[in-house]
Image 1 (cartoon, rainbow, N blue to C red):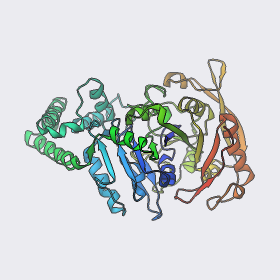
Image 2 (image 1 turned 90 degrees about the vertical axis):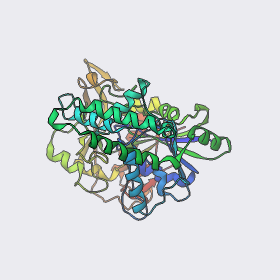
Image 3 (image 1 turned 135 degrees about the vertical axis):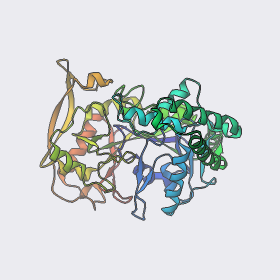
Image 4 (image 1 turned 30 degrees about the vertical axis):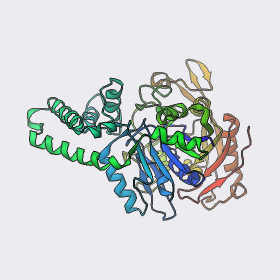
Length: 435
């Protein structure tokens, strides 16, 4: 059996978690291979209570499934323990019987998070989630990182966590520094959480390849989105890992020969959290607020991790062309179609850019160049009908179908799954039209 993949095609927050949850019953195993606690995936199971996940794969809401956190994930043990508690309080099981963590995954240390927060409070702020991801990634590529396998040598873990906090302390004014007693207490609390995760550790690369060779169906769940990819995104306004299909496979230790169907997830509503260019950004604050929705709702445009209001833009097919091409997308899942009428009686969809006096059908891959682009729009009519109860394509108004067909025509990929509301049942399925 091949390994199927779901990845985000925009800037994260596309709705990957809800589509993973939707099809997870078709697989024995759901695996995460990139990102860390900076990712926010929300699923709304039959209980209708939103379940926010950050490091745990979205298959955890489906009983009987195996969930894997692979080598390429940056694991924050303290936040992961808290996430376990939240999952259990929501009525789901998380145990060493249904969740495995790679021994080779890198650990987020206490000082990584502090360094991230310090940068975000300075003139060098990058709009990060303050999760320490850039700093654990830096240690990884400096070959100074700490992996979960070091749990078997606790002296190393303690020394690295302690030394990191000591060095961070030196950066602070004397009045703000931690005492040695406080540092030791923080290190010991961190070590306690790392120790609690020992029963979950295994060689996940061996595990996942064994499952594939035994004919099991596996679903790989991408974190963040294409335009945050460190190699192909809007550098430097990117994350610290590869968010593409091949980056995900690398983070799991799976050969491309196992690759099966690739589903790309995009939102009908364009949004972005943090700094960086947003070519189709809406500057009308009232319109942006209307599209964003009310704070606190499961499907409103506020960061699942940061809780910050997302910047809002018009749908952008130019950026999507890059993501479809590089990820080798076989089909599209389009979320939040029910939000399109929030734009008003019409909606503008970017179909090309003007950059340095020329028309571009694909987007430049740097923040510097994107800041110099202007969008060229096609205007579509929206609709007034409530589509949240739609069960099939024939239930949708003609204007909604026209909107979907524009994505298909421009991207040459079928839209096969259409989100019309946040819950598990609010998805319209549509057959694939393109080979």
